[in-house]
Amino acid sequence: MQDTPPISIVVAEADEPLRKGLASLLVELGPFSVVEASNGSQAWSLLRRGQGQFLIAGWHLPEMSGLALLKVLRADANLAGLPVMLMAEEFTKGQVIEAGEAGVSDLVLLPLAPQVLKRKICTLLELEQDPQVLEAERSYEEGLDLMAQERWEDALVAFKRVITIHENPEVYYNMGYIKTAQGRYEEAIQYFRKATQINNAFAKAYEKMGECYLKLGRPKLAEQSFQRAAEIYLEKRMDDSAEHMLQEVLKLNPQTINVFNALGIIYRRQGRYQDALEQYKKALKVSPYDENIYYNMGRIYLEQRLYNEARAILQKAVQINPGFTEAAEMLRSLELRMKDGGLD
Image (cartoon, rainbow, N blue to C red; front, top):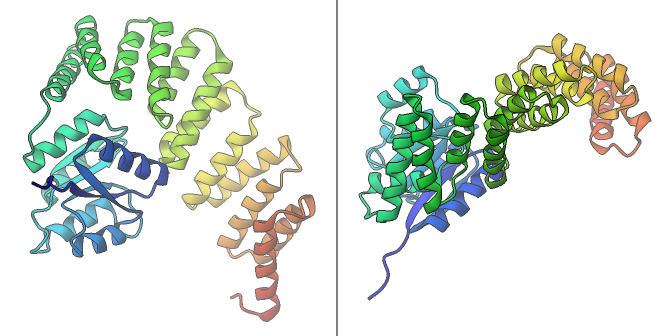
């Protein structure tokens, strides 16, 4: 008698480390196989070809958002019943309502709690579940309820039951949150650190760790924690959260060049070109020979179609570092287009 084949899950997420991490986790949890997609259009193509029995998609997907993909699936007669789970670091009330109206099967918050994720998938697919997993899930839900009631010690007991079954970064984060609420910041830091050891892209844990260090009068460690949180938020294009963390870093160290550069990137993405340029100018006052800053300024001038300014600033980047390939190629392309009159 042959074994039952694993259930095929399409994981659609633009963030490659998150996507591959989730794929590995699902295979480990089993009985699942995974097909990866880096954008919504690719996921849609895979599902139309019958390569998935379940979809886990990021809310913020390029080409076709997770919500748009959900709506397309629900409008397709052959795929309307496919279970769809959307994931994000946070959901607004409006997003929850919109996803519900579009027919989402479930919403999950990042970072994902492995056994909770498996339980949700198994429930939607009506698969038999491990009793130990169910016990951990019940304890986790109990802990959340007790937290909402501010019954801190009882919540800790429930969460400790969970980690005797399996370690979970979200559980450690919640335990750190409880210790913070109790004013026991040293203990909180240990729990937040444990969460980041399991999931080194757990931005919220770094953020809370930084807040605890501030409470303990350790600004340098707080700055490092906030900086790491900002980097993760920036990578995930969570610009508002990244900006908040960067502003916290600036309060602690007003001359942090990486912060000015990162804020410039955020403002450029948002089309706030003058704000971005102001940040890059601040960065140049601290580090006047940083070719990357000149390169980023050059990109802004190009987007504004200020070609002479872009050429001058890119020339500066290449002059500082002749081996700066990206800047040299951008400058060469710009100069050719200016020479040929290919710019309007």
